[in-house]
Length: 171
Length: 192
Image (cartoon, rainbow over all chains, first blue to last red; front, top):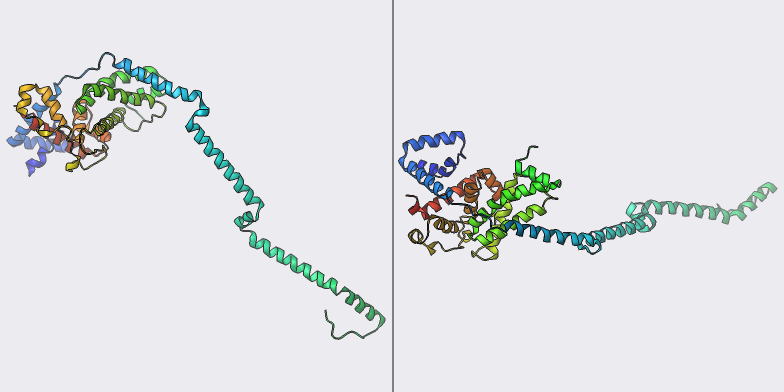
């Protein structure tokens, strides 16, 4: 079990990717375990052979083909820049901006100038109560005016010393 | 913040210094071609994809923001390009994602080339070690292969491989170990 666990770390041991403590633990184990030491040797031989595999070099026209691609890509992007009106991305962004501006303006109008706005501002109830107060005041005044004739007559009778006040009339 | 040498070159390129890109181009052309060639096994495709990766780097100059080591970023792009290429051409029957973790799941094991298509003895007779190695690589699952190639040929540390493959260092350790065991098994006749 110990060998199995340590064997899993052989590649990391070769690449020195283990912690200092793990490296020294592995070294101690390899010094006493021929099976793991054999596995380590075969790993090292494999790596040596693999590392000796020659690199593939780019073909002669690799760089030239690359710069042709860059030129094509640049040409593609510059043609879009030259005609911004036809740039769909730009058009979409502008369209969204205009739509948002219109919505905001319409909303602001309703908010400030209509009963929808009043409701939205939470003022409708206050306004209605003020209106009711106004109507009540008007009604009181109206009643007073309506009885003005009677009051004048009453005042006149008083001044004449006539106490014949109609009993069934009250203010 | 202190950036690695290649990140500094890319930032210089972003500021308009085209010579910095030339240096990166020369440095990464060979590395990318070799990585992709060993990943896919096709020289022609390796050059094509290497150019795609380099073009992506070139076109990213305005938006580039260093979040990791430059080489980690490049190898992540390259590995994704390789995986996409494998998917596109149905080299294998099941899709594989760089971010997928279920490598041990049989459906995610690559079958680009049938494991039984050659024996070490046949390879030894017909081709030399290089060809046998190329064929052995084809039998490895993608993530094992990517981790192994990045570490062995691109000199990427385990943490850099982890960054390129979006996994933990412990996973990289396991991937590389299993790749090594798999290759040792396939190439045992060459390493006596």
